[in-house]
Length: 350
Image (tube, rainbow, N blue to C red; front, side):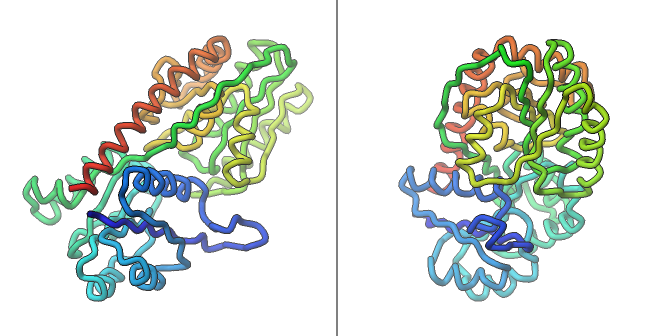
């Protein structure tokens, strides 16, 4: 029987007065905690540890004695596994990736590290998206001249899980403004500016003022230009009543409450593997307009990330058919989540 230990790295700028006690990017921590809880519910021994750096991993493995250690995201150097494997030769190490290749292109060491991981004994790479799985397998299979069977064993598919706790919401369309939540870290591939243009056009079309909500506490991967343009756009339109509203990052319960206060959620990004923010919006009974990158999103309400007219039109569709949007997205998200549980259970029960 497998015994799992998830290991996550505390954020480098952690400050106990500013950040939650987990000291992590919210999405990564939530993703791992959802998986951890799901495994426990299926009778598989699983724990989570948050560490300062890779020098703390030995201590956690010694304390918990797992059969499998899942390293969430790319932060443990390949050379560290030379030491860890000698200390814990029976442990299987799984490096779990959370990005598609377009996003991974911004991680300057990613391809080098993935290539080096493949030379390490007992190290497996796990992808949470089918395209990333195929591309990583192809890369490492060519590099190592692996037969198909070895490639399938060394690069595996472990998708995201999301708890099925869904709400319904009553909508108030009599307001003179519309609240649209476009949450998540500010970075270029999240496409905030184009979504703001679509939202402004939608609000103008229905004769309402726009309140465009973001949480810009995390600016990542040259995202400063994106937030500057958002601020500039809404400052220029201030006389027309459209507003940019920035919220501080909050613990999960507070964020879910914030999502529930929106009229529509927006996640029309350029690259996604799952999108927990979109799932949070839908879980609170709020309709969602997403990109086709989100694997569980209902296609009738997905928009072209490069077309503000399409975004505006899909916002209007979600606004007019909010209950259908929520019901359909909650159903597809539940189906995705049920399949995830089967995949994880099958892998760790074997």
